Length: 306
Image 1: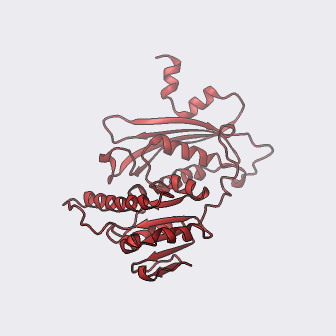
Image 2: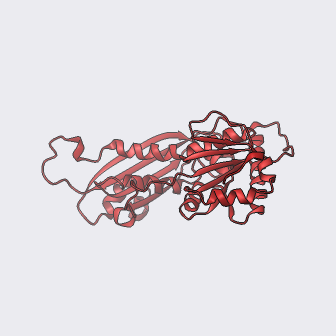
Image 3: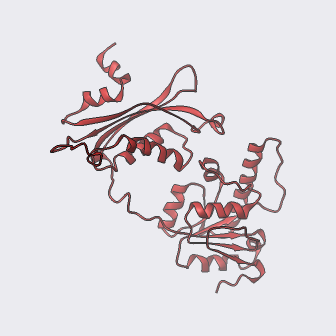
C-alpha cells in the first residue's frame, strides 16, 4: 500500500499533519457515534442509524502561558456541540451537507484555523460508508454569520372559502404591501384524499393534498411562488417574493416535527409559524387553535384588509 493510499484512510489527525504548512496545535474527536435519522433513500426515513464522527481542528499555538485556563483554548465541547446543533436543526439527506455545516460551525470559533471532518454511516451494510472534507478559515465566508437576523414573516392561512373568494388577489395585494414578508399557507382541498392503511403513507398523501391546493392558489396569482424548502423561503423573504408554503419537505425533515396531523391544517400552520419565528399569524376563514404566535382570526366573508 502506497503512503498516499494509507493516508487516504488514516485518521484525520494524520492527514492534517501530512498536509500542514504552518506550525499548529490540533484537537481531535475520535469515533464519536450518534444515532440519527439521515439519508436520501426512502428506506432511511423513519429509522435511526449509527453515524460515526472523526474531527480534527487545527488552532494556532497560544502565545504566553495557558495558565490552565479553559477560556483560552478551543474546548472539545465546541466540537460535539457543533455536531449536535446541526443534527437538531433539521433532518439532513447527505453526509456531505452535514460535514460542511459542522465544519463551518466549528470555524466560527475564533481559535479554529482549519478543520477536518470525517462522517461514516455504520449500518448500511457490513462496511462503513462515509465522506471526509477539509475546510479552512480563509476558504469560508464567516463575516456576520452570527449577527444576521432572519426576517420575521407574516404567515397567513387561507381557508378554501377564502381561496375561492373573488377578492383573494386584492387581499394578497394588501397583505404583500404590509410591513413584513408574506408567506401564505393553505389546507387540503375539499375533495377527499386517497386513503392508505399505512400511517406514513397517509401522512405523505395528506401533505401532497395541501401542496395541490397551494398550486391551485398560485395559478390564480402569478406573484405567488410555491416554496418547499427553508433555503428558498429565506431567499424569498429577503427579496420580497410572496410565497405559498408547500409543507412536505419541512414537515418530513423536521427533527422535532409537528404533533398536528396534516388534516388539521391550521394547527400545522401554527407550528410552521413558530418555526419561522413569525411576526404574526393571520387565519382567514377558519377557526384557530391555541398558539403562542400573535394571531388574528378573520371570517372569510368579513375579510376587509383595508
